[in-house]
Amino acid sequence: MSLQYEVLKRLVKAMNIKKHWTGMSTEELLENRRRENAKNRIPNVKDDDFIVSRIEVMGCPVLKLIHKQPADHANLFLIGGGMISSPRPGSIKKALRFAKETGLDLFVPYYPLCTDYPLTRAYEMIHETYRVMLRHYTAEHISVLGTSSGGNLALGIVPYINDGHGDTPMPGYIMAISPGTCVDSEAEWQRMLELDKKDVAIPAEYMKTAVEIMRHGDDSVPDYMIWLQRGNFTNCPKVTFIYGSDETLYACAPSFEEAMKKYGVDYEMIVGEGMFHCYPVFPICKEAKEGWELMIHKMIERTKQKMKPDYKNWMPKGMVYSTAAGAAGCLGLAAVCGCTGLIKNDSCRRAATGGLLLAGACAGGAALWMEGLYRAFSYDGKRQMSRQIIEGIANFVTLPEGGVGLDVGCGSGALTIACAKRNPQARFVGIDRWGAEYASYNKPLCEANAAAEGVKNTEFRQGNAVKLPFANECFDAVTSNYVYHNIPSRDRQAILLETLRVLKKGGCFAIHDIMSKAKYGDMEAFAEKLRRMGYEKVELIDTTNGKFMSPFEAAWMGLSGSKLLVGRK
Image 1: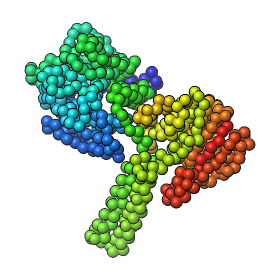
Image 2: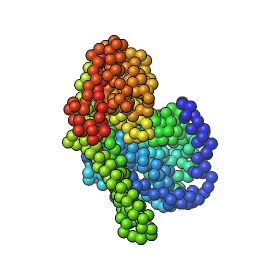
Image 3: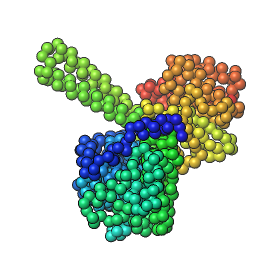
Image 4: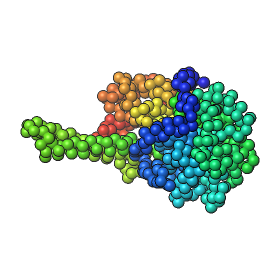
């Protein structure tokens, strides 16, 4: 276990989260949760890549996260909370991230809780939400993912369909993360008590209290809703279970395995050694981040959807919108200042109005410029400059049989994948720092794009261009595109030399960037320096003369000085 995880585990244990589930009567616990839920609000989610909306099913809200680029696969995303806590805003952010990285449309139901209803109500609402999804997607293209009690509900959709709802087709795939169920045997209880000594979040005691809570005074609640291991799993689709070995609910795993075997279900049981409850959806330490990546990989693999690659846009749409909104705000305030008596003094009013008009005009101009950049860079637009640049660089890269190339600052994986496609006999590695300032770029996005392109000869790692985590002369090619000018440095030629350090003798390089004198110094002299060092066929190619863009495009887009440094070591 990493030091970060050990510290985190001790911190959570010291916080004694378990006390929030015990030490009070059932009614006190429910009243406490009602108060907490009343404060909870559905967050206002916005994202450039999604159409976000809400619908109502049986009087309950369902948050829809639908890709703007049409997807034919969807996921019913069930967030747990012991059947008494509603989804937190942070959970919705994770749901959005999940939708981005898997390429799935998402339906997130705020199902009825057992603070106010028997468990049957939640099952009914979730079933109806699934039926709504069936109007737009085929059953085999719908997966269900649930966490904690949501994992229980995800699995429970199968016995619910088998319990008098046979006209509803089974979903294509189920992933249950840390699903719990009430104790059904003494052996199960003893396992739970042993695990309770390790668990830092969920007390074993609650799993007995939960029986009364889930019934909510209604003795007609079917047994399988409370003891899911008793359910009828006939015709159940493929199921993936994910547990942490140190969580109380892992005691339920053997019972679930027995049920899966009884009904001949194709299932897999994944156990994170030493990990906590629902660890994949709390990616805050190395081991949990690996769990998140595993969850994403399994979902993409099992749903087998034909995804479209998402290489993002070098000009984020959100920046365009926020700048345009700022322009509108300034012009609106200018109108208020100029047309009302808000500012009494004439000279002050004229100065404020003029200043706001100027600010609005500047922001408006900037928004128009950004919109132009967005359209030019877009992979779906008419110009598709990003695609032209990426494919143009890849044309300079040829690897030997079994060779390995390195793409520095891979971002969304576009250049790495293009080079790998051009060299199927070899392998290409993409590295990036993936800093917070580029939050939408990450390793799972790169892997998803490679999968969408059908490219299997890529690998993505985290790394820093300033100090590459590789030995000298270990790659047959090195590439980079518009990366180094973003790195604060007084000597970007040193970064180029660091990249060339890992290149084997005879290996090729193709590095594209804004290599103006202000950013890089004298690059003609640097090219000559490489020749003196023994590098061959060294060229510094101006890409603003029509190769990748016209001089006019380079000027208005701020890309003047773009050059491609190529050669062989």
